[in-house]
Image (cartoon, rainbow, N blue to C red; front, side, top):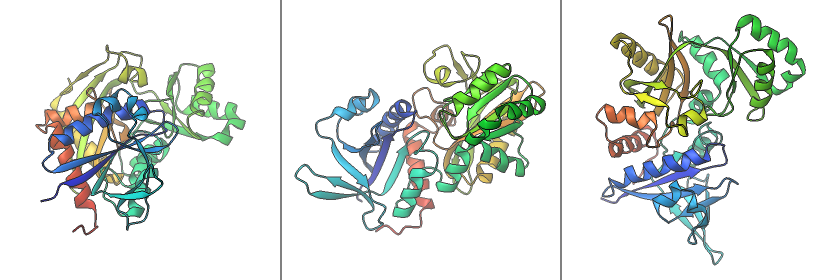
Length: 361
């Protein structure tokens, strides 16, 4: 039986490029443990947005040296279903067609986790790991996520959203936030992952500054009421009948679990399973699956929660392509469930194929 060709796409122009390459190295190593079934094709996207066929070591992906490899060749992903993959541009000016069976987009943040690239894969009728265009876009937009989950009876923090032109009425907007939400508040770009651009506002001055800073990352901003309590995370995998892992707990080194606390501060701790009552764990798992289905997710997602001081389970956000670094919660939670790293990628690839209606010979 011929090996399935798996294109691992990594990097990208988003502010999470550096996390993406580390996640990609983990995914590639895990897939390669099943080298009898899979052949990995590495496609890197530079910070400037150039697509390259990369044929060097996995280590150089992780350390960022991959962009300078002498054997890199420019390539593009074809939206034409005839090509079923990539067009590689050869040094002599000719081109070749690299057909793939599945794309594994290890891309975090904008253009990778927001439905943008998923739409191209869907046009090309190439199976891909993770959520489709619509569910990716809805989960990426925190305002839309709040709206859909609220309609399905799933509790989230109170929130108010702003679009860029609302800055002309910033004083009025802030007054409304003070009345409805109260301090402290969390200010977030609506469409950024990995806690990028998030700030905590304790007063009006910090609120205005946080809103203006968040608008440098996105055209929409969400301001949320603070939920005091424990931060919990649950990994979900599947299509029609998703499976939820046990629950992990975050003990952030910083005031909240921002980008630095998540990836750079060794003092941040995680606990698997979470140090909470078993009834809470089961409630979180149940809500995680309900949210996964409500948002139309498929393949995988990590669902993040707060357990408030009042004992309420409050959903924070849904990450449709969660980090796959050695410290990331998603692979660690699934490993705790008895699913090895290699088996996780194997299952995700099979889920992508199962969801696809493409007839492959």
